[in-house]
Length: 291
Ligand SMILES: Nc1ncnc2c1ncn2[C@@H]1O[C@H](COP(=O)(O)OP(=O)(O)O)[C@@H](O)[C@H]1O
Ligand SMILES: [Mg+2]
Image (tube, rainbow, N blue to C red):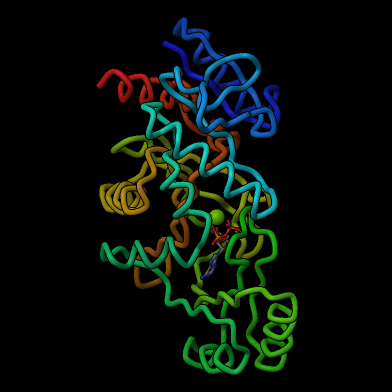
């Protein structure tokens, strides 16, 4: 069996964890970045990197798709799709990576599965955005539609500031994505789904409403109950993620899923769980390949 990892940095914490797990199981593997892939049409191999044919791989772990120009991202997704159609098990599947790139798409798919999501409005138009701001109670979180790690999120509860924020976003040809602010007491839940179960979860405790670990929140161990487990697993399924980091906030009237991450890190989570997450990811992938 051969499973490779696409990563910008094979010495990064997550890549090292995965490599160790693969080595422990005697699985041959190599690491390379997207920039070292050559795809071919009309002659073989369909894709190669660092001297090996990628179409002969059993599995390919994406860690992560990364930033890039529109051209780069579309090309990367196309190569992953091609490899998938040639029989390589790509983790996460390209369709999951694509669905999770955009917060609006994620929440729409979750709503279609009747999962609890915060009321959210998305528009390119400043006047419509101001109308939606009022609809959402005049207290919203404005988020970059493609964002992650809590970067660029702002809470806006003043109409004049809202107008300036919306104008700034559209000036740079951005799309305005806003969500009702849900008072959650500066904590939320990160559930790490692998396959059809929550492999580990944590409560993230922050000093303010933004509870990303990369923004300074502290991971605290958490045993999930059946309700959270079901929401997290269903949310991952809705976007076709085999591995997912599901962010769940708790308002006074219940749980809300704010996003599903298709390329979640687990360094913070690993400090508060006994499960070896990298090993569970590899074991899941191996069982899928064999199945
Ligand atoms: N609607 C909301 N109300 C209150 N807090 C929110 C809301 N949406 C997000 N947050 C907080 O901000 C954090 C980051 O939001 P999220 O949608 O997960 O974006 P990112 O991709 O940047 O992680 C969440 O983990 C949560 O703590
Ligand atoms: Mg998040």
